[in-house]
Every structure is written in C-alpha cells, then in structure tokens.
Image (tube, rainbow, N blue to C red; front, side, top):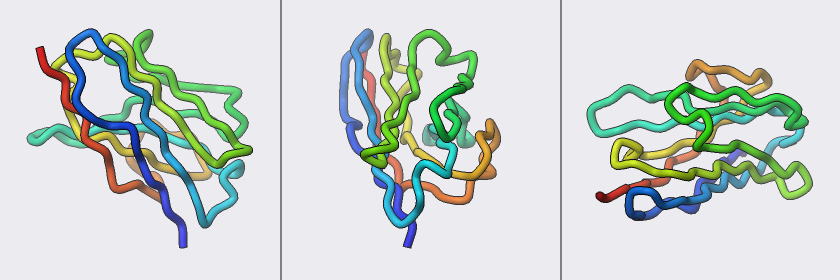
Length: 121
C-alpha cells in the first residue's frame, strides 16, 4: 500500500520559514518524481514545485520561485519543501504527490493527506 505522509506544517508569522517533509512508503521512491501542491479554502489545488527522480531537475510555479526549494533524499524515502519568506497568501493545505512523470498538473498517481500551513501578519 502506497503512503505519502506530509509533516512540518503549522503556524508561522509573515516572513518566516517552514520545511515540509513527505515520507513515502510502499513504493520504490527513487522511481517516482515528486510534486508539491497547495489548496486554500476556496481555491483549486495549485501547483508549487516538482522534482525528477534523481533530483536533477526542478520546476517551480512563478508564485513561489525564489522563495521555495524542493528537494529529496532517496536514501531516506523523503521529499522536502523548504518555504522561505512566507506571506499570509501562502496559507493553505499543502500536499505532496508522486508519479512516474514530473508534472505541473494534478495528474499524479499518489497523494498525501495534506498538512496545514497558516501564515499570520
């Protein structure tokens, strides 16, 4: 059974940082690209970043380019999203996802349950 479990969410003041983790099990992690998405209470799920299987290529949404960094540790089966310079507009539930292809769409085979990030001014 494939499981993706996000952690590291919480509350932070504007300008602060958080690092999200995505622990994967039940799959050969290094065979899968990873993506991070978020969804606010009244918004569609929004693409943030994706990373290829080896970590050799990354893609970011313009809204987070230069502030967020996606990475992965295949030895530990964990993906990360380092978030810096957080703003109140970054408040959302954050999801990790895995698929054979690194996509900017939501067409990922596997999803985590999400972790809440709340940014206050």
